[in-house]
Image (cartoon, rainbow, N blue to C red; front, side, top):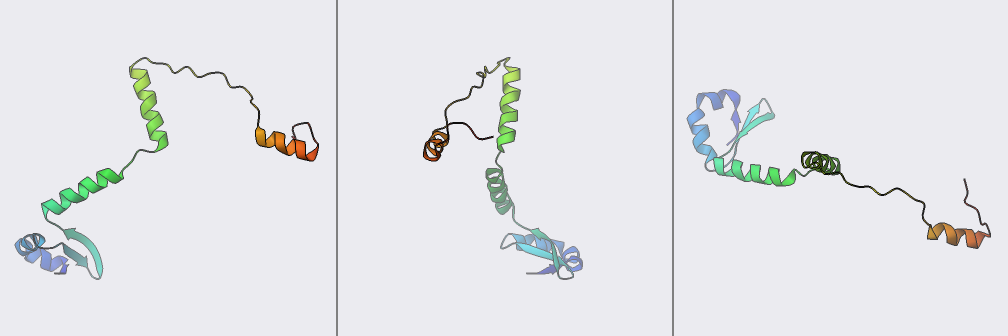
Length: 102
């Protein structure tokens, strides 16, 4: 059943009873402003919503940083070094160039 705010207020008990059977949308003029649902449907939705909420990569690294600080663990990061680039080397050989372009 479709409810407007005034009718939902007047027949609140009916609105709640109806939610056991199906979601009960409440409208203000022609715009839906709320939906009353039964508790089981709400718990299913919350379970789904929690499963959809995933940590971003930045959040994961932040969590890792926090754990490392708590455990007083420092990750040893090896010094960066240049390494060969096979694609660059093949392109240079084909073009006859032997230096790296700027």
